[in-house]
Length: 359
Length: 264
Ligand SMILES: Nc1ncnc2c1ncn2[C@@H]1O[C@H](COP(=O)(O)OP(=O)(O)O)[C@@H](O)[C@H]1O
Ligand SMILES: [Mg+2]
Image 1 (cartoon, rainbow over the protein chains, first blue to last red):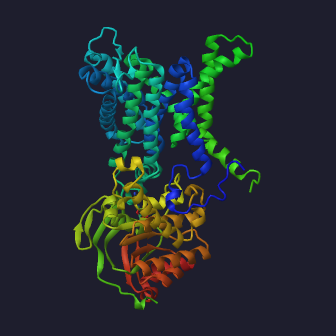
Image 2: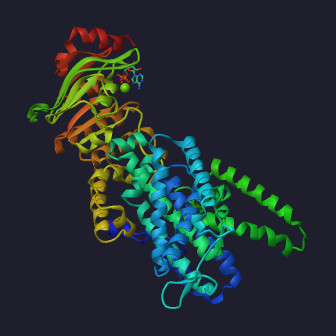
Image 3: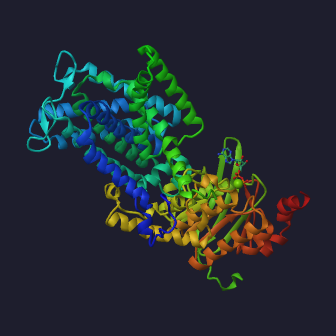
């Protein structure tokens, strides 16, 4: 009796258009928000906030960005790391050139700059598809990282090449970057940004824009005969996707690590985000979060479980095991369930909804 | 049956179209017109150039020679999305739906051109953006009722049987509120009952909304039943053009097409 659709009659299409048309889903979502905004700040340790929750949120944002482009619009990209780097370095240049600019504005501007770079590198998508587009985005990835390494202007001529976040406050003395920033403030700031951006993404993908993306993904010929302009639609996907990745990169550099070099956003990062959306679910906003959580938590689990059971496993064993598990899971999801953990979650819910009558 | 209908002036005039692919002549000097509010059937053996004709009309193929005048405007080439903007919708011989999307979403895509709110509005899904979404949802639901596909509203179309997919594809085209509807073998692979349903839908659309329809069909019974006029293609040439009765008695047609069909 916990999870029922029966008896909840939708009185109008309006009710049917809510993000969570089923009441129990709304409660679950509200509960998750309360835990995230109230309970976590009260009980979570520094370690959990800084090393697990903040990177989880930043990864989720990047995964949403890539999911928009690859999962919804069907344009494969291996340039996520490169776009994150653009966001990080744009934030650095803006924050150091205009110290009075509010950090929120800086992040948004950095996102917009990344969006423009994304559009530039998305241009070939009109002509090339699939594998060849992936190669083109790979070229973008290498070019961007090379560029940030090559020209010291991007890091204000610091010899180490590391850009470190200057202290900036959202308002008053609520610092979210720099050494003074307190971890709860950082966490709440990232959480708010990710909540807003995830809701915006969810709204986009379930409306006209999302349907245009999915139409291009599923069959571009048919998309054109219903009036979709392929280039415009693909470039919008590149722009919005890059906006998300750019902000994720900015938060990575400025809030999570506090200082990075371009190498933090190399090709490994691109693959890592790609794995998140494959495991979490292509074409799912929830899946972006699930995939990010999985990839952040799996190493932790692998490290702690043997310890808790009293085994002593060497570290290099663990990292090998991790690669093997990732590899196996990716093959599993690609072949068996391309819609990932999000789909498994949905199936689970449907089972629960029918319970105890399977038919 | 068709006597009461107000068939009007030609809305589309195809003149002297020649289309070839390398050495293959798909269309040779074909002229035809489609008149307002009529149901025109294009028939002919396989490979006659029927699909190519539809592809020329909605901008997929660009003919080497000839012109197309639509609603009085002559053009030589255009993109398919421009055809859509001018009110031409179509379905494909091999269903071309968005397989990962539900029936409802597929039909909603037919409303894209009529939705005006930009992506920033869409990110909030509230106020004017929500009102617009709901307005088009109501329209999509009317089509779902009309085509009697309420029960598969939320089913991803990739999971539907072929006959239903054809129906959803018609629904997506109808959602565009087209002035000219091009249907490429809408009844291929259907059983008798499904064909009857589809014929009824086509007649109703033509009747209720005054939509001009050009369709390709192999089943001569259906063609004779629902069309006002028939154009016959054979090896890329037009060999007949007239009422179903005229065409049925035409010796060239009997030789080229019906003869073949009867032997088969
Ligand atoms: N894209 C294409 N490339 C090469 N040849 C084509 C193409 N489209 C159609 N044709 C050729 O044009 C001729 C007419 O094909 P089509 O219009 O599909 O016939 P129908 O629909 O009447 O069966 C055939 O010989 C076919 O092989
Ligand atoms: Mg054909």
